[in-house]
Image 1 (spheres, rainbow, N blue to C red):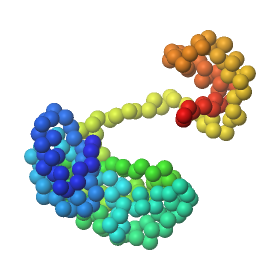
Image 2 (cartoon, rainbow, N blue to C red):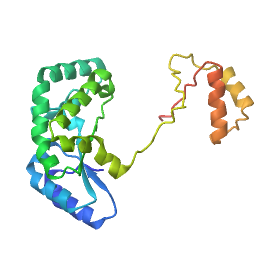
Image 3 (cartoon, rainbow, N blue to C red):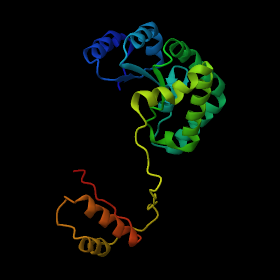
Image 4 (cartoon, one colour):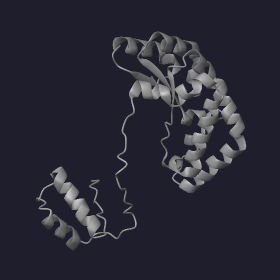
Length: 228
């Protein structure tokens, strides 16, 4: 996957033709999609190994900016508040604008466009933000022809990339964030019971034993990071 700009469309063509057995997925800023839309459509039509990711980050577009990044800040709550305020006041125009931008692409190459997120900032994974990103994406996809909606929503991605990682339903997820930090004595005890060597190299079995031992002691290990 990579992110070209409009002026590099010819270079994209050279790359995908040089590696016909490699699957390429591109995404674009709105302006780069618009500036070379006919070129991108032609490339997608003519090359079986090129696909397009229509991402939530670029769907959330206001006044020339991807607002998911505009509001990224060290102050998480401020970022969330600013994003929610803008989205809630401009939701309809955000959705309408995205439909106008992506519908010609979907209609031209419905088997080559797939939905993604491309959401990087930490604050964007807060439910107040992420749920709105998904909501907008659903309404945009609903703005396409009915016969294209499932393809863009998930079927194209499933066909091209497969099902991907599937979580074992038997896995039990434990939230250890509220547990107290393990004492040296607790960690040493687990080292001894699991026969942990005095090195950084552990087998999978030793690592599993150690972690289970700490869980049994109802504490969490705080790893010291070497940032020197």
